[in-house]
Length: 257
Image (cartoon, rainbow, N blue to C red; front, side, top):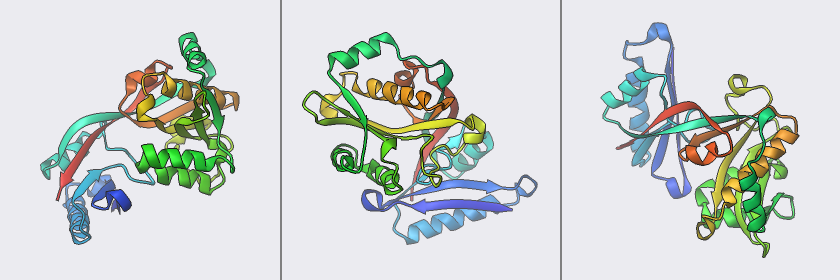
C-alpha cells in the first residue's frame, strides 16, 4: 500500500541522501502510512551519518524533485519542514523537425571545434576531463562505458585536440540495461536522451556547449529516433535556442537533518 525508495550517496556526497520516491496507494492515503515511511527513512539516514536529504535525484533516478503536477506531495514535504527554492525541468524535442540553426553552425566553424564519439581507445580522455571538470558525473560516464556504450559518449575537441566538453546520450545502439529515458512510453517509444552536458570552465562563452548538443541532436535524428529527452535542466533558455521545450516541471528541496 505504500513505498519509499531512498538511497545514500557515497564519495564526495557521503553526507547526502535522496528520497527518490514516496508513493502511497490512493485508497490508503491520509492514514499516516506516508508519514511512517518517511519517518523510518529519516531515522535510517541519521543513523548512517547523513546530513542532507534531497527529494528526488540520485541514480537510478525516478524524479529530479517533486513533480509540479503533484501539489499534495509538495504540501506533504513542506509540512515536514522542507524548503523548496527552485524549479527544474525535463525537456523534449521533436527530432523529425530538427535543423541546427545557421548561427550555431557558423560558431562551430569559427571555433574550430571537432565533435566525435568515444571509443575504447579514447574513453580515458573523457574520464580525465570529467574527473577534472565535473567529478560528480564521473560515475555516470563510467556506467555508460561499463556496458560498452562508448559511442553514447560524445566529446568536443578544440584546434589543439584537447577535450573541452562532453556529454552522454542514450541512442538506438544503447545497451538494454540502460534507463536514461525512464519515461520513454510517455515521451515516445523512439526517444533518445542527452545528459551531463559539460564545458570546461576556462572554455565557456565560445558556443562549445550549444554546438555539442546540436551535433548530438543531429546524430540522434539521423539514427531514426523521433524525439530527444533531457532531464533535470536549469538552463532552459540555452536549450530553447535549439528548439527544446519544457515537458515536466519539478520543485527542488533539501532538508538538513
